[in-house]
Length: 327
Image 1 (cartoon, rainbow, N blue to C red):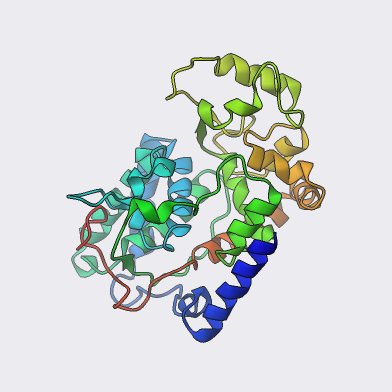
Image 2: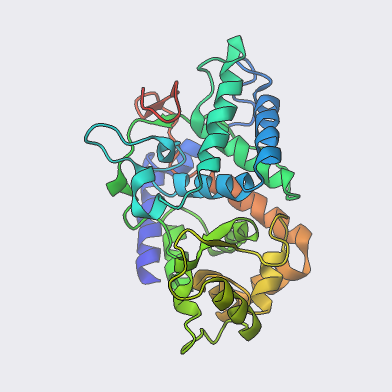
């Protein structure tokens, strides 16, 4: 926890000096494309809606892609870039190999739809399209729809080495989660709210196998739930097998995630710890009981996440012609 506080203090010092997240966020605005591509949000929404209708797993895939993008070098669409030549890009780091292709495809298709409008061609960044698409999949799954800040540029680099230590593994405890989020100028409340993105999406058996070993089931896990997971993920299971993160309402973006935690049905250690740790349990209880309060906190957290490390100066980024290839 102390390390996280030191990181946050250093982070805020940089912001005061004029180089941090806070300064960049101030340059984002909701009407950023009003003059050059006024219908951008409806264009993206239509493309995303079509994609979700075709492939429902797009919802969780897109939300996860956004998180993995922002936590590594900021929200700059660098996670979408493909490896080339002697450069191994972010998406090929071991921690990103499980990112579902449907998330990438959502951004590529939305970008194509935007660029198909002559006045919008090469005017809208891939980073902003990912922000809009994430908002749209959440709303399509029954979650809150909210205004998004725009004006990000796309990153000029993407390297697998930059991912090291930036993403929280499913084994993290509360202090580790809080410290990592604080390094991104996100509060513990933001972290708990953003964890609820696990109300949609899937996880491979290997990510929680240690919690369901027959000889030593994690005591914070409901015994019945553990039995279901053991049956679905037996020893030697195909590593490509994935289970729904929320076993109750897997396709709905709602506050069921917190109700599940109250019942010992968080899939990851990093999920269940939010309830088993006395310091975060009151927030879990509050949002399990009040979906409106959760949605307000989630929208605030997503807005804060969208401000992480954004690039708004032309020296820092550009508008990528192809989201998967650096200009």
